[in-house]
Length: 595
Ligand code: ADP
Ligand code: MG
Image 1 (cartoon, rainbow, N blue to C red):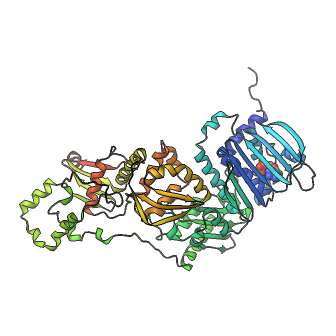
Image 2 (cartoon, rainbow, N blue to C red; image 1 turned 180 degrees about the vertical axis):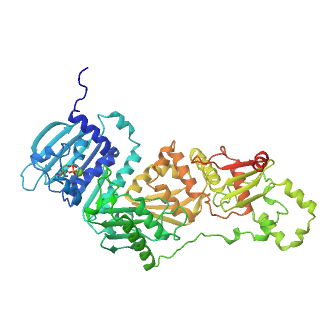
Image 3 (cartoon, protein in one colour; image 1 turned 120 degrees about the vertical axis):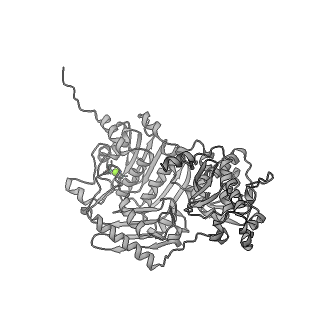
């Protein structure tokens, strides 16, 4: 048998390499934007069509390339940014691997116009699937324009692997945020299908944060700076009371490069300890300057993870810096659980079996969704009072033992456990119900049916609410509007302001701010993918956002109503997010456990 090993042709090698560098349109955008920054551009335009699947174009006013350089730029391992291995330890540019353009040209159709200030004419170059298809002199301004068309046109498997336009667009916006945040001095514009998503003037870091995340964020930021021999840190934390449930506002930049670091994130979180409610995450924007010799950015091909030599020190510095800022600006906890004191049943009374069980009597005309808050049916005032009446007449307790025993055996007992579970007796044992998941299920079915039937009842807000939208939220709103209407929201968009004048009757206006934040959250890809339709997705988001959470006290009537509502659902076993809602401990099992 002859020899069987041969060298791969360049275009095949490039295609394989591309798999590492370019996963999706957002990766192309990251590489092109970073190249423009490295080329010292002061103004960068990003244009995309079809969520980057059809066209991505980046236009910069940077240094441009010569006729020969532009050809070399598309060769693998061709870079102007390092010359030797030592240079790897003092990298100040974004790129250095010389792989991006070669990779992109291997899996797309690329057209470049580029001109240096010293040249009279620009060069035009066209490459598809690593093959040069044309090069000529052209009239164009100084700088570089690169258009990348039909990404993965020659790798159908990868093209099919791309997600919906909406998901891809979110990735693109995330990458855009990261580059734009690190370079506030650079002017950026971003057009999507001919509509402007961002127009960011050249400003400082704080203003850039505001231009991206909405102007209201400026008042929520507290500066946090620290200069040590290990590193210099400049940035902002978001006041604890404005923390979010998503992690969308957590940014570490090291030497102007976005990085992910669970370790350093932990340093910030631990400084916030005790100041945040469950499931809320601190927001922060930190730019860290550190000697390139003390870091290794080479461990990940897409370069979002790095190694620090002085990791432990950096952790301590960040933690104490954040603590200090929180203290300086007296960002003391404003933990406000808005607990209604009426919800608390006096301790002694809780132990007493209700003498007359008002909520269990069946009232066929009772509409559980009328006059409700939290979507949990509220019992009428009179039944409330009758529950309390036993308090005022303690002699009620003097019922005979016989009578009491009878009541206990005939009526299911319900109580709340650890402010997280509702426990109820059944004929054969007991059920332990997770209150949050049960309520999610109830709300989910309610919203889903109202979207399908378009029959949700709205309540008018006495004080209409206004929410400022970021440009990408404005774009997203267009897609969500119809479903929001059929769920009972009365909303109108005016420029970038959303006017809310009506909300579904099972929603509380106090929850509105959080609710819209959750609806517009750009982080929920997983949920998006797991949903079989836009309506399903919306119903899930709403049920998640509006549901009673663990740590909420429910009074006995609310507990009872939740159980009734749950067992009126089509699916009583699992939450909309596929979690078990309750466990059933029956006699047999109990006996087995006690064996
Ligand atoms: P790297 O950025 O790692 O060097 P790339 O493949 O991204 O590798 O780019 C190769 C080279 O092409 C760069 O080193 C740079 O010299 C040149 N180049 C790429 N984009 C631009 C641009 N927008 N303006 C000027 N030169 C560019
Ligand atoms: Mg590059």
